[in-house]
Length: 155
Image (tube, rainbow, N blue to C red; front, side, top):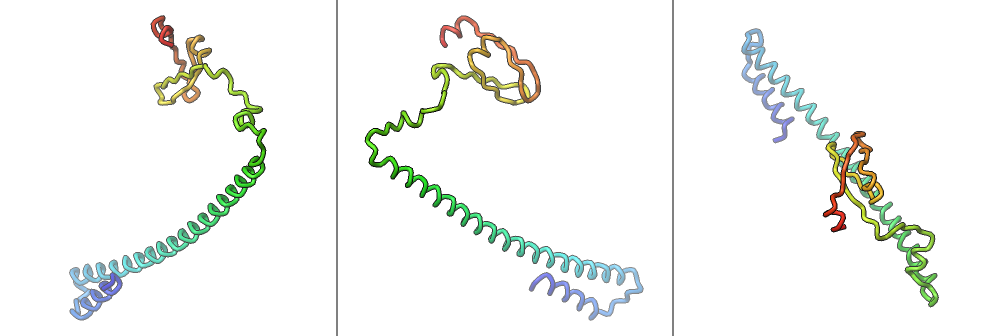
């Protein structure tokens, strides 16, 4: 039995009992049954809306899957074309081509990390370490640090 059917059944019971709605007890029971009817109608509306939203979300998910498949297929095609372009080229040096035009800086430089009191994690290099302080970009707090001789020897 659904909630709607149960609410209708209670309404029928109340009518069958022929309660005197002039007395306070009858008025209260009548009001409760009316309230249950209203709640039942609202609940049915919510269920219907939820079903409609789920259906629309399923359609959106299908559309996104189709878009993802299209994009991935397109990327695969581009990768295949790229590989075909260089497949027969014996002079091609992969490392040389990939690094061409890019400046990676001093590969031996160390990157340090410090956590501010606000929770922001800040990365900095040895030049900043030598300066002795850095300002947190999140909260503006000045973070001061120093490297003791033992620590410098380890680095």
